Image (cartoon, rainbow, N blue to C red; front, top):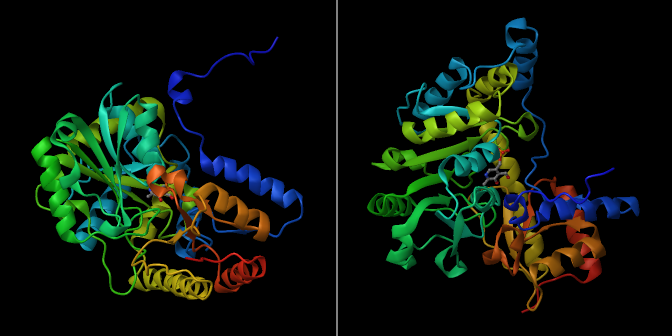
Length: 395
Ligand SMILES: Cc1ncc(COP(=O)(O)O)c(C=O)c1O
């Protein structure tokens, strides 16, 4: 007897297919055929975790006090480190007990926040394109996603003035993310002021994802939502150690901001998980205290790759914007090509993996996202393969 016929819950069936999982299948097939893949598809940093962080984890693992269940709300010491880091970095005071909550990576928290706050039928505003958890979490929760289509002529920024009153009045949550995955767009401080005023006017819970807080170049400093006056009354901000510190596999991040909103998420999580291994929290504290010279190294690495790839793509006919932050280039498909077809053509003809822009919502159609997660030698090889296969941008 098997239960092959049993249907998953409606909330799973409501989800569009996860493009990254589909890409994984195609990559596995290509590898079986012996193709030497250059994988620029995921946002998975290619460098090692800094040695002091690994050393801190090993030392913490030797301590039996860390071997039991961790505290639900994270260790007091990690929460203090988060609030100290925030104060140092943004000049914002946070109460470590109520305004900071460690997470099993920010994706976990972004998704669970939706489950904690969205009832079936609630309206959620989400940009398109967006990081998939920003719309998939609300869909899992049974919410109605209202897509805010982003446009290149608007610098891929949300235009809150274009949101009809009737929509804004119904909306319960707005997710947003600058510097942006996938577009690489950055938002000026005035944009943050405008979106905070909008959320306050319509009493909308504002969720900012500052995943790329430190991956910024050419003197650009991303703004934190909580730097904006009045933001803490209505908003929370998600952070991760995955990208800046090459710790994607460790699964550690945190949320900061409004204590009431964080309490709701904490209550849900208390019922779902047991938090992060204390030794990893200890290592994360070390990461947050690394000297700036480490950050400069990481920033230089991605900036060098960005410049190299923009230059190489330029020789193949592309005019790619110089992004001031993130680890991505947002690249137009050749005229007439859709995102999925173009990404598949590139994979089949060159063994280079890029992500179709429509994986991030309909607003990403016509683009692919290229992750800067290989060194310049490999990026150069990818460009050579493009040239050999005649893949170029022709307008
Ligand atoms: C915008 C954004 N938010 C969140 C995440 C997830 O990060 P984490 O590893 O903390 O779950 C990613 C990962 O690519 C991302 O791009």
